[in-house]
Amino acid sequence: MVQALWLLIGTGTIVLFGAAIQKKNHRKCTDVKIEITGAEKDVFIDEKDVLDLINSNGNVIGKDLSKIDLKALENALEKNMWVNNAEMFFDNNQLLHINIEERQPVARVFSAEGSSFYVDSSAIRLPLSDKLSARVPVFTNFPSDKENLSQPDSEMLFNVVKLGKFIVADSFWMAQVSQIAILSNAEFEIIPTIGDQIIELGNADDLENKFARLNSFYKQSWLQNGMNKYEKIDVKFDGQVVAVKRGVGKALIDSAKARQALTMIGMDSLNKEQKVVLLKANKIEKPINKNVVDGKQNKVNNKSLSVSQGTVQPKKVAANNTKPKAVMAKDQ
Image (tube, rainbow, N blue to C red; front, side, top):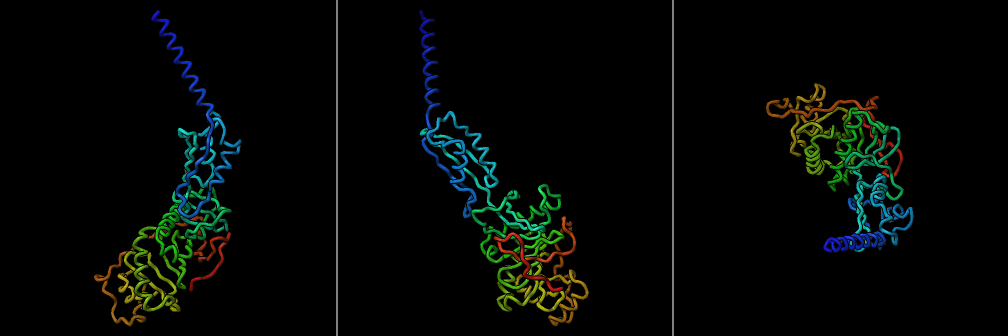
């Protein structure tokens, strides 16, 4: 008798459990809520794109939950290059939540062959979008269009990301940097928005100090001499600002202005001809004491990129163009 009772209870439990499962499987999706994160300004995938994809096999609203494969839908969303991560789940009200993390570009890159792509903070190359053009730093003369990059070119792409992230994070440099040219020796030259000169940045190391020296030069030297006195400004060596005066044609250090900009000029870093030009231009009778002046230099990465036929002159491009247009060439 007791055994029969327990058997009856067990059977009833199984029947009720099965009925509950059956009822749950026949519940229907009531609505869809989409949240896209990571997109502060530029949205390259929107709610319409997401809805079009999840409804490609029929409208999910009103469909039985058992017939909706969330994992397959997540994988389909993540095939979009602009989607970094996608997560989907139902709440107790059968509301489908879709959370998408969008990739954010930190640079737009023009290759030496003329193609163009975005790159995100993980060095993932992203296609251009028909929806909009992102406001990010523009790099020209990237050495390769290949899907699989050589080691030097891959390192250069990571340096592009490093420099792009630094500029994007600072509103002043976002406004002041018009274009960055990639040179064949794996260094960078900046064409500013305001000022008719080239800024030699060197590699992507020690960016904070390099831009700090450049900012000090802007604040002090240019306030006194105007924006176009110099045709080239070099900040790639540690503790130095090297400025070439317009029309001089030879490397020239304006030592007085550099010191005002809280920088140090190293005579040991100049060749004999440059020292003569420096002394004449600044009317210095004796060389600077090398024991007083810090002549320490940064190590410069001289690895050649894929394109190594001489120094490539920077070309200025509009963000929406497919090919860069030449606007300036350095004086030889």
